[in-house]
Image (cartoon, rainbow, N blue to C red; front, side, top):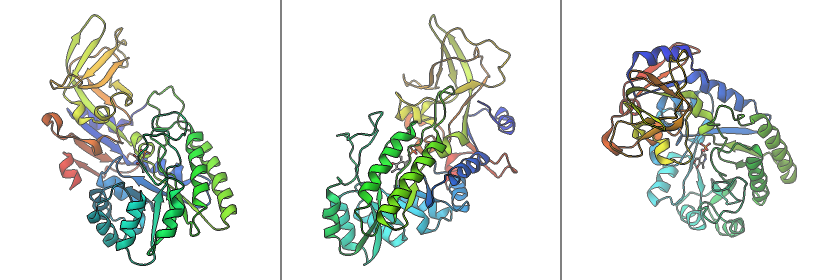
Length: 394
Ligand SMILES: Cc1ncc(COP(=O)(O)O)c(C=O)c1O
């Protein structure tokens, strides 16, 4: 996997820990989504993947929207100049305050249960358009789409008719679902879209089907990437058939998070100490998993391809390398058992796919500093840098 040379030049100057994002990659990925051959589509970036103001601004400036699930991210989106009609707010268990704030902000809300529809209907003005989340199956725990008993989101399909009979002020114009994250098989997402469309056609005022995110990013560079073209062809067919059945235009909304931003970012750290052991090598770094938190949240699933920068002339370690953090937390590992060049103190290590679910998951755990952040655009001039996340998030 290659890292643009201008990014490496910057990273070499710093000790880290440091995130660098390249907006040129974000532009490229938006172009790929734009090219999907679906008659009517809207892209709403899931801000939970990365809430950096410059990323939100670029999404808005490129004519796209966001999907948020908190008032903090709603405010971040508004601060990044996203108009209310470009913001979808979807959360479960919304409080009355959150509902009122969404109504005041004029954003589009997706409701998650019978009770939430009733509560929102009671305070919304007549004709307010909303969507409802429907549980048509998920692939959170399983490889295929199925009815997972642990799935806590949405109305049951049979509850949709109940909701339609109850609302007085709301117009239910869309159905929403989210089938799981990091799904590598387009078929799983397409099965979900087909099921969602079949439920959506029960809505007399159906305007959109929101199929969430979930487009996968392969952690292993030898795994083929998510087949976006196959998804596009399948989704186009499903949406065209749906429009024929309901005899009206229906927009496909997608909410990509990880697929859109993981490849725009790298995380750089320095090796400060090396311990040789019989079966492994510990490469100790100046960073902690608390500063690279996807691994903290998903220790069993999350993996980030990594490499020692400027070590191509060095042999690969005969023993697996465990990249560890500078704390006393026993699970402070940034990578476990990886094949890497023989590590040495002073080495710069780069972690790929650090543009999603990293900065947005930062935690105060272990009292670590917020890593530096630099945002640049390798297709243009450098557009900004932030020494610390706190500053960047203001
Ligand atoms: C409703 C919804 N949409 C979109 C996303 C983004 O998902 P991903 O990063 O897998 O594309 C999420 C993430 O949890 C979500 O809950």
